[in-house]
Amino acid sequence: MRIMSLKNNVLVFWGIMDGLALVSYFYFSLQSGNVPFYSDISSFYTHFSQLGASGLMGVIIQVMFFINIALIVSLFFSCWSLIVKKDIHSIFFIGQEIARLLSLKCSLALIPLFMHFTGYSAAWGAFLLFFVSEALKIGSVVWAKRHPVPHADSMITG
Image 1 (cartoon, rainbow, N blue to C red):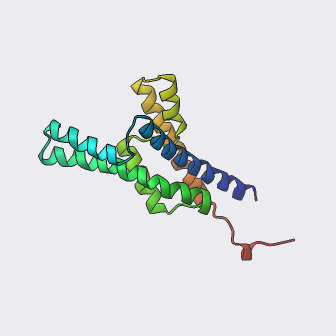
Image 2 (image 1 turned 60 degrees about the vertical axis):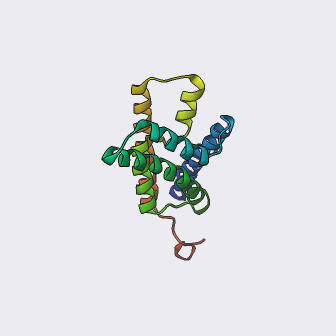
Image 3 (image 1 turned 90 degrees about the vertical axis):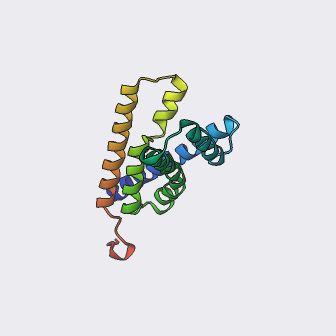
């Protein structure tokens, strides 16, 4: 029973972190007077055209931007999956982790908030915290997935 409880707590924790990241995105976007997603896309294409990137470099820049947007959208689904269903599909999890690594978006949403509110901006520290965060998430979710919750019909009562 303890493993089931710990597994649920681990998954709910990461679901809350995804929810906090999503709420932070909307809060800071609205606080800046922007419309979430719309302002980001509009601003990206304005700056992208000024950058003058074309060819392969232009494609890479656009792909990276849309990976970031897709990651933000995916937070809705991972938050719900981890909190309500207490499970996450492996392919979705792997895809989201790859997107996090490519966009350097921390799974532990408290780290970017800490950095924002304290003014901490050392690049080496941010990278270290990012990699620790991702190692913790990957390790704990893999552990939780390896300890499946038994079905009610297979549990022995009494």
